[in-house]
Length: 67
Image (cartoon, rainbow, N blue to C red; front, side):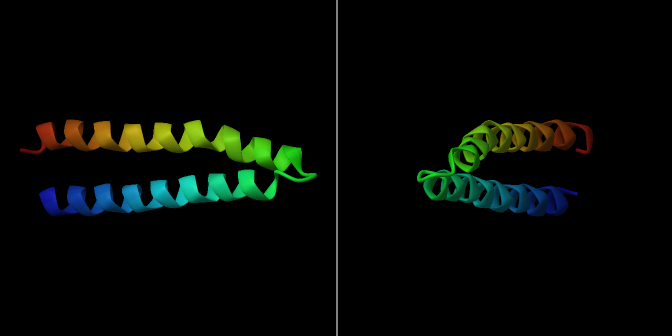
């Protein structure tokens, strides 16, 4: 179970970093004449950070119950 949780944690971390890069790209591309595209990138950042926080918390909670 520990190995599965570790793999899941790293998978979520990789996806979270990719999500932050995608949001940054949207903001950079949307800077000129596409303000809604930039706004979508900016509003995506809290969702990515929330998902990473949830994954970090969930890993700790599940680890307590399966020891």
